[in-house]
Amino acid sequence: MSIRQMKGVALACLLLPAAACAQSAPPSASAITLSGVLDLGLRQVRNAGLGTDRSVVHGASSTSRLVIRGQEDLGSGRGASFFLDGTIVADTGGAGASAPSGQFWDRRATVSLTDRSLGELRLGRDWVPTQLVWSGFDPFSTLGVASANTFRSTAASRVLGQAFGTAPETQAANPTLRVSNAVEYFLPSGLGGLHGGLIATAGERGTTAAGQTSGRGLRLGWSAGRFMVSAAQFTTRNTRSGQDFVDRSLGASWNFGDAKLSLAQRRWRHGDDRQVNTLLGLTVAAGAGQIRLSWVHADQSGTSAATNGSDATLLGAGYVHPLSKRTTLYGQVARVSNQGGASFAIPGGPAVSASPTAANHFGGRRSTAWEIGLRHDF
Image 1: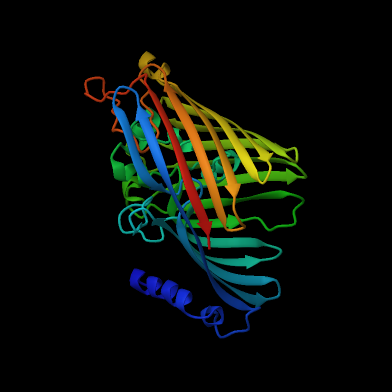
Image 2: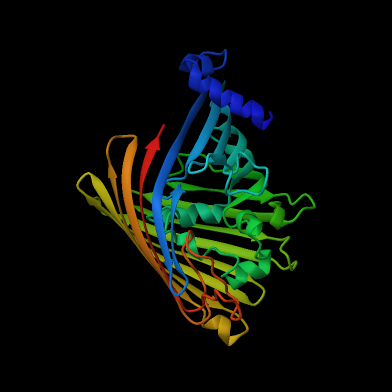
């Protein structure tokens, strides 16, 4: 189905009664649903020595997106389904902002077969398992100015830059967020809290810079009551250098009822270069809303003393307040402190450079930001 046809399906579901969006089979056996999020906010980012920028941004609390999904009951505990999930660049009316050029359903585009006893087989574009683990323990779900993915920068992170390059399109395509051409298997539910799966992706003679990853990975976790632990690994074979890039994440959380404490770590390795990102997160109920706090530290290491001293720390705080089941107000603040030659910055501010000879060299400086916004689920 073409992008134009997909847009037609979405428009039809908006204009027609809900029953018209279901297939001809009985609703209990087969259905198509439309949902999504619109999230817009105001952001200010100050990069020390370079000035301050203000902007309208999208997806700072929850990614603005359009989701079309369908499912069919095949009987005897088996089912078939599809899932289409595309970014809405709500501040400009664009789409597919976080994907390589031409991808409308940039977040997820999959088809699945499920069996109650055997699990799920899934094909298409999906999340890399290490990102699922990492974002699951971040109070900010790796979004906004306080995102734990602030250190996922191919320009500032030596290990990512060496493995995938530093071009802007590479930032979107490198396989630390999502991967295309995937074959996945997921464990069935009902295994006493055990969950996880396997994934393999076909590079199809392409490059990671073009969003074509040759890789293998797995994820395994266990939850019991208020405690959860999870770990994942994904290895990319077709890096820019030809050496394997290994991405590992693990974490644990404890829900105290009115508060949830989480500790996680994400490790990247490519050749002699390493980056270890450590996260400590806390969410606390505050009346109808929720306070979110996080501390993230990036520790870079390699063959040079300059790389070994180029670390950074992120402090984040935020508050979300629901106005209804579908509408939420939020506010968030963050600060990144760089050490040595580290040049990480919060997105949305004046352009920075890791090059010591550049006029906007940002090594060792601070990036601070705040944002306020409104999110509506539909």
